Image 1: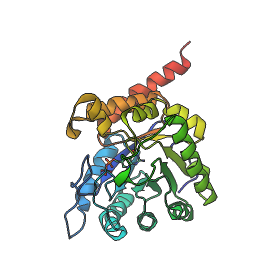
Image 2: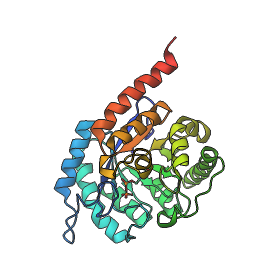
Image 3: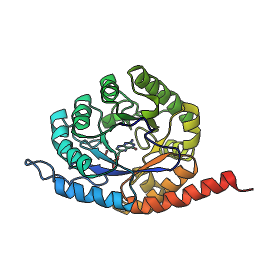
Amino acid sequence: MSSATILPPQRVTIVGVLNATPDSFSDGGRFLEGASGPDVAAALEAARRMVADGAHWIDVGGESTRPGAEPVSAEEEIRRTCPIVKALAKELDVPISIDTRKAAVADAALEAGATIVNDVSGLADDEVGACAARHEAGLVIGHLRGEPSTMQEQVSFVKVVHEVGAELRSSADRALELGVAPERIAIDPGIGFGKELEHNLALLARAGELRESVGFPVLIGASRKSFLGRLTGDAVEDRDGASHAACAVAVFAGADGVRVHDVAGARRAVQVAEALRKAQRDAP
Ligand code: HH2
C-alpha cells in the first residue's frame, strides 16, 4: 500500500458496504449462495455499481456484529469474504478493506488483495494490528467496549466524546507500537456499538472534535443504524433518507469519511455538506 493517508484530507472518503453475511441487520444475505460459497459475480456487480455511484473504497465483511448475531469461525469468515476480496481487488481501482476482528481473517484477506483492515473492536486482539503492520496495510480502529453480543447491556459514559477519544487514542498508540504507520491509521467512534441514542448523536455531531483530540482522521458509520430508527420510526429498509442526513451532519462536523450502504444518495449528501463546511470556513 502507498504511504498516502487512508482518509486523505482533500476530500471526504465514501466507503461502500458489502456484507457477505446471511444475517447483517442492514443488507444480509445478498451475496451468499450457501455451501458452494459466495456469489462473487453478484458481489462484483454490486461493488461496480457502488464505485460508479461514487464510492472511494469498498468494505467487505463476513460477520454480522449486530447484538444476537451468530458467532462465525475464522474459516467461515474467510470462506465468505476472500473470494469476493480477490475478485474486487483484481478488477476495481479502489482500495478494498476487510471488516473483521480476527487476525486470521485479516491475514487471508490481505493476501487476497485487501489493503485495509477495518477492526470494529478497537484492536481487541493485538495480532490484528501486527498483521496490518506486516502487510503495510491501513487500519481502521473502531470503538467498542467488550463484545458485540453483549455491548448494549451495560452502557455507561459520563463525557462520551472525551472517553471514546481517550480509548481510541490508547488503541491507536498500541497500533503504532505494533508497527502500523501513522498515516495508515483512521479512527471510528463506533456509532451503535455499545452506545445509547444520546451517545451516538454526540459522537456524530462532534466528529471533528474527536479528530482534533485523538489526532487521526475519523470515519463515521451511521448508515441504517437503529438510532436513526429511534428518531424517525423507520424500519431498517426505509432508513436511507435518515442515513444521508446523518452523513451530511457528520461531514459538516468534520468527519473525514463515511461508511454507507446507499452510495449514490450518500455522495449527494456529502457533496452538499462539504460545500457548506467550506463556506463556513472561508466565507468573509
Ligand atoms: N458498523 C458496522 C460494521 N462495520 N465498521 C466501521 N468502521 N464503522 C462502523 O460503524 C461499522 C463497521 C455495522 O453495520 P453493518 O455492516 O451494516 O451491519 P452488520 O454488522 O450487521 O453486518
